[in-house]
Image (tube, rainbow, N blue to C red):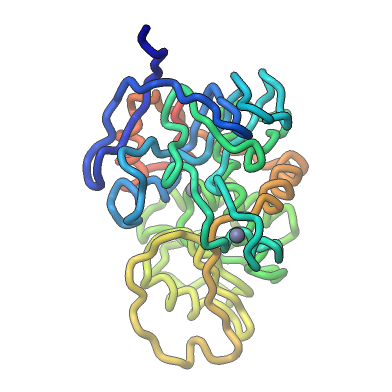
Length: 332
Ligand SMILES: [Zn+2]
Ligand SMILES: [Zn+2]
C-alpha cells in the first residue's frame, strides 16, 4: 500500500532552486497537529536560507514559516485545537522550556529553540505538522492569504517596534512586508513614520505614503527632522551608520532581520549621545498573542501578493529583486 503524498516545494541544497516534489503527508507526532496549508507567506528569512546565508537548515527542507491552515488531524495528546480549527504557525517551532531564558519569558533566545522552515519542515506544501503549543489561533476578519503575513512580517516587526521604544518619530528602513504592517501599527499608536527605500524606488515610496508615512525617500537621504528611533528591515549593513546619523540623541536603531551584510566601521560620535544599536531575534509566543490581538483593532490591512505553490521560486526571486509592495503569499 502506498502512502498518501502531497506536493512540496523542497530545498535540496543552498543556492539551488526549490523543486516541486511529491512527499509523504506527515503524520502528527504526540502533541502535534497535522495542518492543511491554505496560505504560507514568503519571508526574507526564507531567502537567507535558500541563498546559504543561514547555514544550518535541515536538508532537504520544506521552507515557510508564516503558515495559515486548518487542523486536519491530531497527534496523541494534542487537545488545544479541534479538527477544522484555523491555526497559524510561526518561525518559533520549539523551545526547551527549562533554560534560564525560557523561564524568564525570553524563549526567543533559547539555545535549544528550533525554527519552522529551517530545522523543522514548513509550509511550502499542501500539509505540515506543528507542535500545538507553538501554534496560534488566528483572528477572525482576515482571509487566509491576508492573515499569513501577520505571522512573521507582523509579529517580529511588532517585537522590533516595541524594542524601538515609545518615541513619536519612527524611521523604517526597507519598506516591504514587515514595514507595510508596522507602519500601520505605528501610525495607530500616534507616531509619525519616515520611510526609507532603495534610492530611486519611487514606487515603494508612494506605497509608504499610501500607508501613512509623513515622509518617504531614499536611504541615502536625510529625513527632514531627526528621529527618535529607526527599525532596519533591509539586510544591508551600511544602513546601520545611516540610521544612527538619522536618530536624535538617546535614539535607538533596531536591526530586525536575522542576517545582514557587514556593517562598515563608523565614527564613535554617531553612537555617542546614548544612541543604541540593537538586534531583535525571533519571537516569543507572547509577542504573537499580543500582536494577533492588536492587528484587528488597528486594523492592520495586509497587502498579500498571491503566488501558486509551484511559483515559490518566482516569489523568492521577486523578493530578492525588491519588486514586492506587500507580502508574497503561496497558495497551495
Ligand atoms: Zn530554553
Ligand atoms: Zn520570517
